[in-house]
Image 1 (cartoon, rainbow, N blue to C red):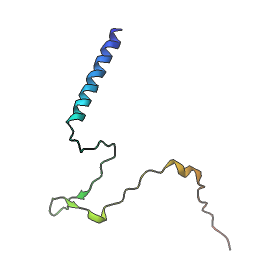
Image 2 (tube, rainbow, N blue to C red; image 1 turned 90 degrees about the vertical axis):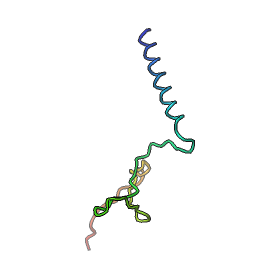
Image 3 (cartoon, rainbow, N blue to C red; image 1 turned 90 degrees about the horizontal axis):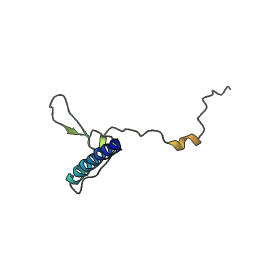
Image 4 (cartoon, one colour; image 1 turned 30 degrees about the vertical axis):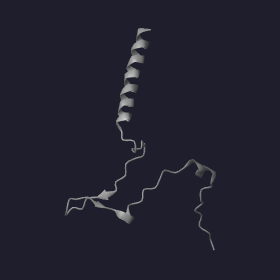
Length: 80
């Protein structure tokens, strides 16, 4: 019983701390779990960040689960 009470108090402290952190965010900030992507690169000769602009590198997403419904292509050579 004491162990449960102690664990509950620790979890409550963690929840309160997380709530305080979330309250400190500005109202326009968004919470995300997305992986951070680089939007600029640093040229060797200058050392200052240079934005990619329209030519940003493409990073494809992971394969989705709906691809399991499609047949895999068969790589057979056709003899003539």
